[in-house]
Image 1 (cartoon, protein in one colour):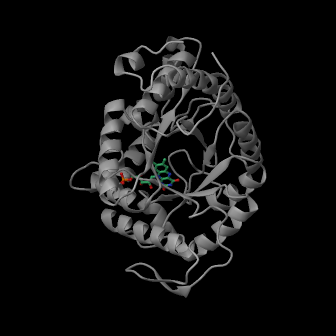
Image 2 (tube, rainbow, N blue to C red):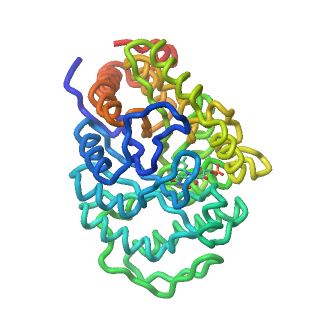
Image 3 (spheres, helix red, strand yellow):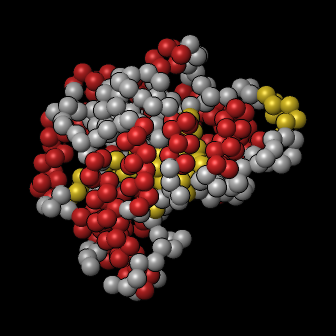
Length: 379
Ligand SMILES: Cc1cc2nc3c(=O)[nH]c(=O)nc-3n(C[C@H](O)[C@H](O)[C@H](O)COP(=O)(O)O)c2cc1C
């Protein structure tokens, strides 16, 4: 085991900011997880200390499905950036609620305040009632993606020096040149959450990062291949991130028992409501390829299919699985846990070093691990 050196090839880690009440599972299981602003500031400082590179906020304006209280993502992102030194914080935003010109200006200031650590996650939405409650029109699925793509094009246009004009179906900008420009060049990183066909095509054309819901290696790899091929048609290359709900315990049996408890104590009414609401996403499309189209009730207990990524077991099993994720092309793992009070630090202190050991062993050994090696990775 040598010195742990991070390289461009090293997989990166993000965590879900805990800005919605109720944690990361729709379950009545007891959780040691807070969601206050103070709690989140302390959590960001811990996450940065233990090796997380990114933090992802969620955007929500309306309660439901165990998220009855919510802190706003863009303002909270700015606060977390102020309280940290290296962490990159991703603000989730919904086009349709945020005008892109306003966001581009806010983001530039936040990028200056943080010396270039602000990022955005453009999410196209699934929660019709939320839009209804805010009095905003709810567009049909693929139209939401058309709007999101225009939204990103406007952000990029306003994050470039020249006066920018845009005549779209959703947004119009007239010879506007923002000064200053963001610290990050060419622009702050643009993530997107959304996996349907429309989402894949949008990612290929305009996003820097493609966030996937949890899934098996096969399902994730198929998506990576498809979106990469699509991006290549536009001479672009994307990075890929996947959601995972991590349960690390001393034995696999203990970890599985925790998962079973989470599912057993799930709130059936909330899950049924959520299952119904997300029909506005992947199931709303003809090909049924989007997120949640293949999710069963027990998967939906973790709303972003985080159980499916398979980071449940011992620390070593989890590290091995992360190496496999890296091998299929995952650049970043988005981590959610049950007990933020201790599990996020535990992940950083105990599991990230195991991953770095494995990465170093791979770098100093063969150029590329074979599938057989990856199946049996052990240090
Ligand atoms: C990592 C990730 C984070 C997301 N965060 C949010 C969020 O904060 N708020 C929200 O309304 N939707 C969020 N979504 C859901 C998207 O808005 C979208 O409804 C979902 O990805 C379904 O997209 P699809 O119809 O293209 O499959 C997120 C999705 C992913 C993958």
